[in-house]
Image (cartoon, rainbow, N blue to C red; front, side, top):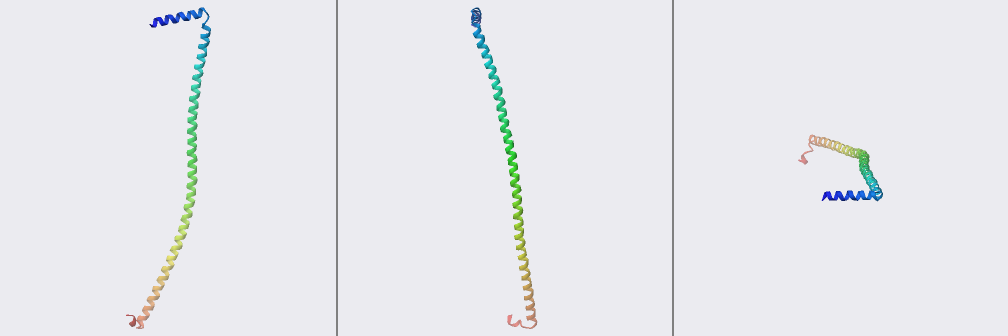
Length: 132
């Protein structure tokens, strides 16, 4: 079967060559070779473009990460400033509250001391009898 196909193909080719019909076939073959070559070139171009597109996407992703880091750095710096302000304010409020507590304890201690002195005087003067 294969021998018959080869033999008929060689007869066909020799007939085309004799009748000079092989020129259009050659033109078609050259056109096909050129088209297939163009397809290969296009395939390479598309492959390179896809690689570049992937590279471009990767580089954009990398740029986005850098931008995100910069933004997070800026927000962290802003947060640090806010935290410092809040700490100062709380320390100021705490120091005010602490100073008020110290003042109230001083007043309380002074009042207790004066009360002790008054009680000691009353006991000495024997005025403490009605209070017993």
